[in-house]
Length: 191
Length: 191
Image 1: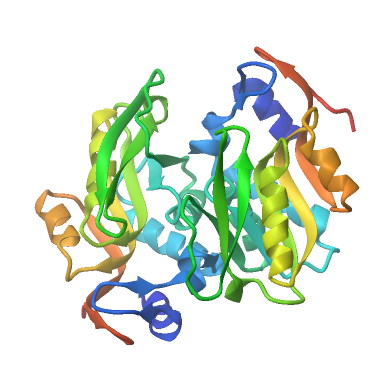
Image 2 (image 1 turned 90 degrees about the vertical axis):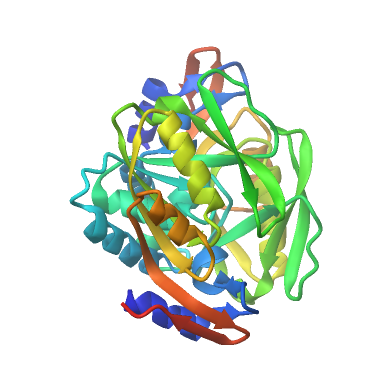
């Protein structure tokens, strides 16, 4: 997605080989018009997949996922991050390791909101090691649904997540796919 | 807002005098069409206030705030909740006590994203004791901006937040204003 790549080049800040700050339009200040365009692009990419539900992970995935669900006319489900084990009725959980924060959290879902037979489009802001997307997919499948597509705003494809998810058979579509980066330098994968 | 009141009566679950669960359409599963209507209503209520920026608190405020910002054609800023003290350049913080969780957290803002002279519309999902809204207002004012309006999706006006904020001079508009509730019973304030 050219608009997104341009915004990353103009306003993003590559700190080192691993860390890209996009606080300016995605994570802290949010350009909602851009999120709406991102939603339109996810709709275009996944509209033939029979999607019945859009799912994301709090908090940075919510804005792009909400704009996607709005345009696909589908409900949105937000998976919650919790540091405690929650055992209320109907709640299912999976442990996720965050390389960024070097700690684990529990991703939780009330299974009333994802049903057997649902075809889920999972949306997230970043894909790097793939731990969050894998955890979310485990929960969605545990609820009896199928992950029919994974839409990623920014993918760091030099990290193992994208390859891992595709090898497992998931249909992953990154809108901006970074091949390589370093301090003040970003190179995208050619399409 | 009649549609919202009806959804609360039909799908919300009043647990006791204090706790209303709206996981079905607002907090966990999100009805994005309803969020869009909520955004349209906030636009109508605040469009003569010269708003330059929409601000919310992660995570449940993001969906309604994003739909408001989209329709008002304004940037959105998401205040982050952190349990640690963050001291990076330009970051400002304020401590907020959560009565729900009975613990404190730090609300943080990179002051690059709210500027002197900004007129902010603060959006949040719930107003009860007002601690989160007061904390957010402190941060916004610390950044040199004015809180020109506060839009609340669901207000529990039997708790002190609404009265406190209005006495301090803030223009607070709740879309659903609960006068009283108890197990399986909700009564709204008459307009």
